[in-house]
Image (cartoon, rainbow, N blue to C red; front, side, top):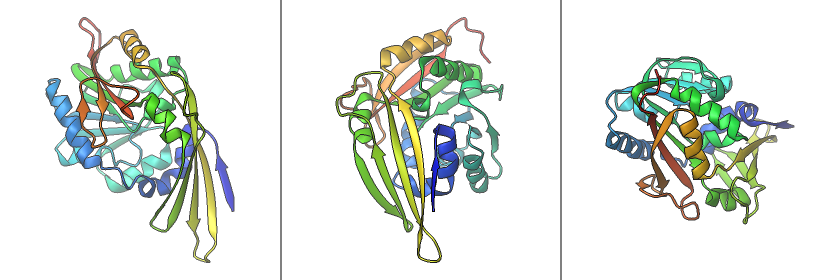
Length: 265
């Protein structure tokens, strides 16, 4: 049996039961250590955390372990159901990152795993940034990552196969190795799940993304009444360097705070 699911949120709804196996190689503990260090360098003072596009909860679990008071939101109810099973005491809200409700005044708002790259226009990204800004304390901090041009010229331009827990994942990137800044790309993920009768069920999901050049991101932050206080290149171990290089780093990490005189919170 083969099932095909188009779109971003719908794609993750279908992928939800397999997502943890698919991302098993991700070291969220180390990633979070670097994120907390970076946040403290920017004066983080408080533990109220909003995790936007939290998925199955892997991204916020290490924050819980560090004593943060976590609220998670995601557009996929299936992903949130997986998160609720892991962390039944965490407040979880189904919400589109482009139109977040007023969830509270948070010391730290995060959006990781290139979630914002699933927005395919600058208008959508601007809406998401404004929505996140509206949930920040006046002295709060927003941290988010975006895929760089290198990611689209490499990861999104190649095919790969992995097998985890008896399930086979086939990644097919349809981007070009010489894609220009601002390009659109997509990855197709085929999941082959072995059934009890020995046959396989195939699930196909498609995940469109867009590259956003750093100078456009900083301009959109300003339009959302946020001051960009840092753009960092993310190294393979999850640590950050002070200047992002779109041809050497796979991800860029942005740090932003409410602009002085902004009416946030």
